[in-house]
Amino acid sequence: MVTAVAERAWCVVVPHHARGARQARHRIAGELAGAISSELLADAVAVVAELVGNAIRHARPLPGDVIRVAWRIRAGVSHQLLEVRVTDGGATEEPRQRIVGPDSVDGRGLTIVDALADRWGVERDGLGQSVWAELSFPHRTPEPSAGV
Figure 1: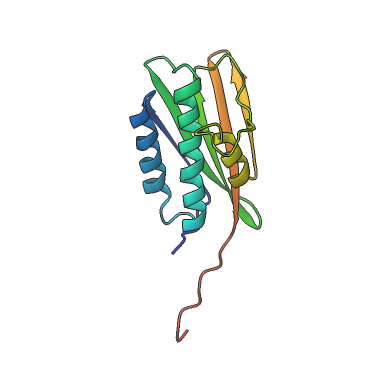
Figure 2: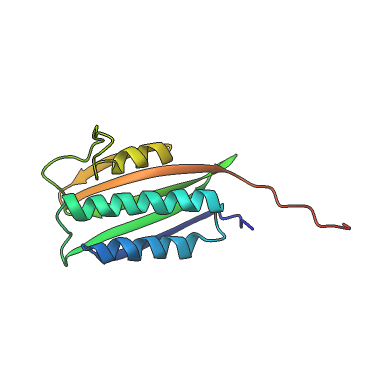
């Protein structure tokens, strides 16, 4: 069952380490279970995994050797929007999709994000960079109760 949610936001700080990616996946899955459809939840977990993995592999950490992972649900007229955002200490190159061969073992992260998200982008400020993605899903109307 999916519960209607007006606007809610979450933010966690995870280690700039592979265990940080696991913590982020588990946290978003736990917080959003029941708030969004299981299909969208699977996509959101995959997007967070890719963005955190990229931050660990390619970017510097924030002070404290961490990465910040945030997400929020916003209600629209006919749909809800889920935004996920991963903030790190920045990298020498801006994140971008890469073209890789079929035998490559990596390099597909932002291609996966691009396929699952409605849109995504990168923002930089004096402290680092945030890579964000937006995923949308239609509002579901509650099932009518039997006998009413």
